[in-house]
Image (cartoon, rainbow, N blue to C red; front, side):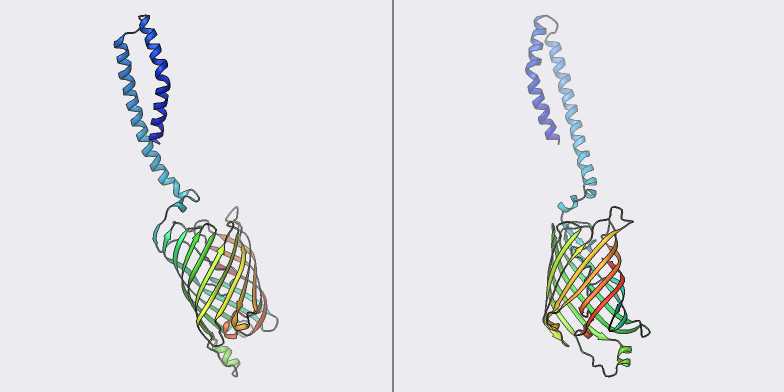
Length: 333
């Protein structure tokens, strides 16, 4: 900025130099001024220009300091700065809202017309370990190393809240985000277990050791902050207990930003899951409700209804079909 003002002043001096010289010559011819007056004016003008130049230097330094303090709070300004961050705030890749096997905190109570009334509870989360990219939790850019884990438990409410089955998930991923695009590549482990109470009530039941060790690739596209479309494929390099090699997921989410965060906004999400273990028969999950999202952390809590149809999400009974309708609360990282 200092250079800019110097150029402007030089152009102004050049433009005015000719008229000033002519006026000095005319005044000298009339005997109104002499060389001493002219020299005095030149000295004073030079001193004034030196002081002006010093003021511009001070102003330029102050403006730079102000910009450094203000730019981080301007939306999008932090996207231009990239650095290494240990245990960064926020995520570059977020869990699918309607994905029943995603790491989060949630509780859902629903009714199955054939099986009864159940309570699904998920205890888990996803965190970032290392990032190279922009700072902040809201729509950061760059790449990040994440760690995830969750326990998904199903309780039978018609039998004293007995534990019917439990699925364990653990994984680690490299995620990346650039503009509206995001991706992930990583590994996850799933193992399924049956509840002791269920075995006691069903002594003829034979437990299966449903386990997968899988590589996973996924991509998503968000044309604006309200919409997200995604797809992923998991390739199990180890599978047992009826599990098979491939699993596909795709879905869409609608999460408009609330005008007032305290009042929240509606949300809608659908997830389609195709597993080779059930002949790629689609398992559908649909959610509708109201959500509240933090403008600082990006975390979201949701209240709403959930519909599920197709093969069950509890892999101990992977070949069982169900049709569920209920309500729940979900906390997303």
